[in-house]
Image 1 (cartoon, rainbow, N blue to C red):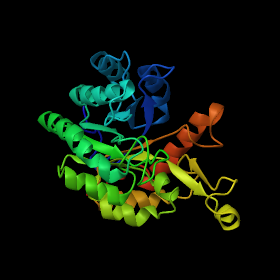
Image 2 (image 1 turned 180 degrees about the vertical axis):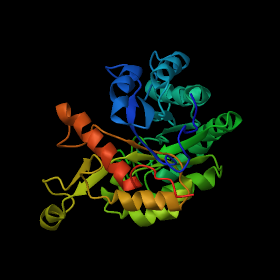
Image 3 (image 1 turned 30 degrees about the vertical axis):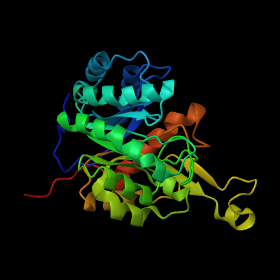
Length: 307
């Protein structure tokens, strides 16, 4: 398996792919085998809190066998837990970060992503010493193996003052994190849905931080401005919904243009399982629509210049 595209570099500097559950009901390699023919160009293998019984070395072989002969790659391994705390699942999350860093190259990728974690119920500032301790060690481990780390920007219901999962959900927090560990191989796993859900314009934020964005989650949101005008932020009626790309408010042509202009060369991997309409039996219908939508927003198929 290789991270280098078999087609001309200009065609797939930004790949369009999807997330695959590393511990799902359907084995990761089986899931990849079934959806690869739809044209997905990359796959992010994700784990919730723990790797469980997963043998990453064996999984890498099974995944490589499914990708053989295709141009698709594994974009990253991802761990979504709280590695800063010391409960049983938290310690498993920390161990999962270590094991994914050690195994990334077996999958042909150089990127591990996930939540930073945080000290539960405490302000962001108070978690910084623990963040520096934990991710200082992980950053050294990653650097030794030529691996980059990226922090997802979901708030998971947290605020600046308190939360359970993640520090990296606001630009002011990113400043603190990267000041605490000013390492070039630490960056962001960014998606516009969380900005829209915070009533923030994703565009200026993307352009400001594009050099630190290593991976993009393809997830969008729809903001119901009429509900906000009528009910406000804390009314009974929901005013924001996470959406699959192509069904939400974001202009993905602008997002991809800004990524390209900023030198981004990674993957946009669709984060499904959130759309209130394209869900259940319509999940892959929505995801394949998103794949084709994002490819069109990328400019369509590569067309070489006359020579």
